[in-house]
Amino acid sequence: MTGNLQQKPIGLLGGTFDPIHHGHLRLALELYERLNLAEVRLIPSANPPHRESPAVSAELRLEMVRVAIDGLQGVVADGRELMRSGPSYMVDTLKSIREEEGARPVYMILGMDAFMNLHGWHRWDELLNYAHILLVRRPGKLLPMTHVMRGFLDLNRAKTLDELQIRPSGKIYIEDIPPLTISATQIRGLLATDRNPRYLLPRPVLEVINTHQLYR
Image 1 (tube, rainbow, N blue to C red):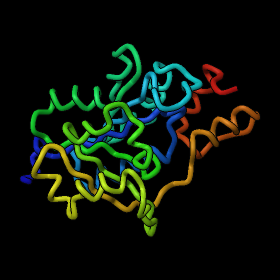
Image 2 (spheres, rainbow, N blue to C red):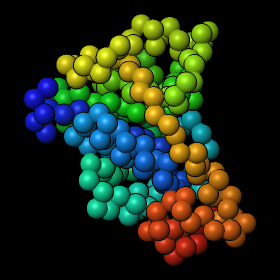
Image 3 (spheres, rainbow, N blue to C red):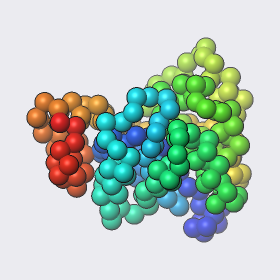
């Protein structure tokens, strides 16, 4: 890699972001800096097919993402899933990004729990056609020895990050990162009981929540 911005990989972090919080943001910033990415894109899911519908509209969740990252270098909002009707399938999102980015390496960022459930995703076995998987793991956490995804991981695992940087897609790489133990469920629970979630999420996000009386 030459370090040219056009050649640096991009990271994709999808989720409901219901609401976005410092755990999401710290992970995005950590990966942006640690892996020398061109950017990390935060992609709110409009109609997530694998979980209950979010408590807040996709438009407001995208607004919260945008105010959360205002002025933050290297992290951007991507609202493409709001532009599509029907379920928000990641394979469709990756395909559209691949069409835009050509041969640039693309990293789909997943936590361990999401990866272990990947076999339930729509056309999950096609995801590596369009992107690499960057599997974020808590330091010291062991991989399950027997699981349907274990063979998929072993078959496609990259031992070094260089293996991802020389091709646009097709590999799985594990990066150990200490988590911030913050959850959107925790924040929604605090708001629902009229408690203050300050310092768990950015102040501008809390202002949007209070303005629209969300999660009450």
